[in-house]
Image 1: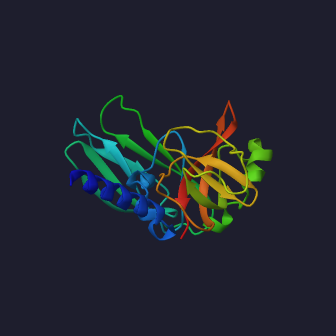
Image 2 (image 1 turned 180 degrees about the vertical axis):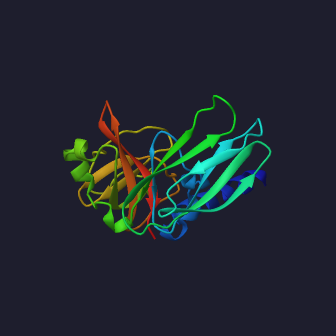
Image 3 (image 1 turned 120 degrees about the vertical axis):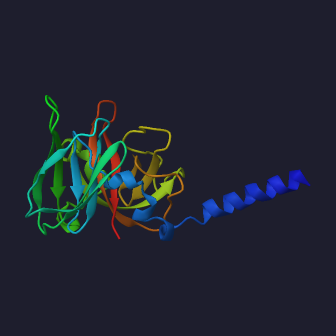
Amino acid sequence: MKKYTFIFLILTLLILVAKTSYAEFNLSDLSQNEMLLKQGETNLVLPGEYFEISIENQDNSKFSIDYDKSLVELTRDESLPSHQIYYFKAIAEDVSNTKIIVKSDKENSKALTYDVYISPADKIPLVTLRDIKDNPDKYINKFVRLNARFLGWSRPVNTNEIWGTLVTKSDTVIEDNTGAAFISGTNFMYKTNYAVEFIVKVKPNEKDGFEIKLVKLLK
């Protein structure tokens, strides 16, 4: 009996994987950390989008924040036992570059700087995988839009070659009408039956020239 129960569970899981579609693939599926700003890189935020900064605070420091109030709005803050969290909203409507600087009241503490790039989605260049493959230097460290299918771990339909870099074991494959490439920042369960639009960041890679990381799925 246990043997048949196990077989039934495996078949059920396979059916669920097969039925995964764009309906389940949306921003709520992505890690909440996608909206958490990171130091040392440019953080893309769309107009009207909410985001946050989380600061480790083991010594009960008091913080001051410097930011451009015409571009971002501080909506609230929250003090936790070991962290201080600040919640923001992007209020700029056009392309803007800004910084959020957080300073502690502790002596000799280093200010924390967060680079924020605010842009409407339609102001981010729409390119193809072939564009990136043929001229990676043009797109390195930039945000671009792609219109492609998420294949999960499946092989591409129209090509045997997969461009870019397999960064981790969880990386998957995307395909448009010009080729296929590896993408990180997603999940093997994410598969779509048709092309969807999303934003990625193209990063340098010594071995294959570039790697592609998912940043935002566009609704």
